[in-house]
Image (cartoon, rainbow, N blue to C red; front, side, top):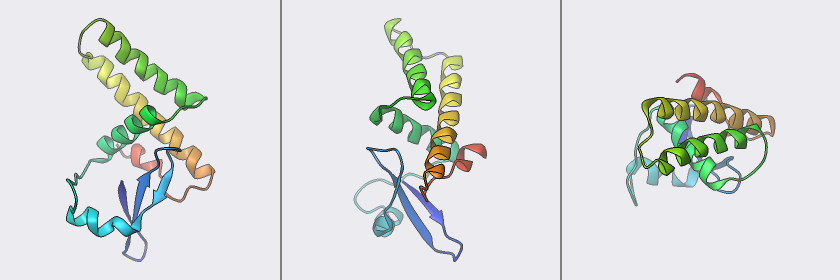
Length: 127
């Protein structure tokens, strides 16, 4: 979820869609989110938000193209560490974070080109 300020001082709530990875406007849950009703609410830095969204997309989405090839690269790095029964190294973690930042921008640019009003690749560019 992300809450974005509107030009008139209001807010729009966007939720990432599990089936497309795009953004669904969900303004009806604004109060629930801001008041923390029904569960825990966490504020994330833009960098952490990007990582969470890309972790979600890589887990739930399937497809072809450069973004999905990069998701597979991340999974391959994780699989090697698992096969070797070890934690990711600091270099591997940094590589994965960098790839996710790149895939976020790529995915968001594709969404924007397709007319998704919630798409915002600039979130990852300020990180």
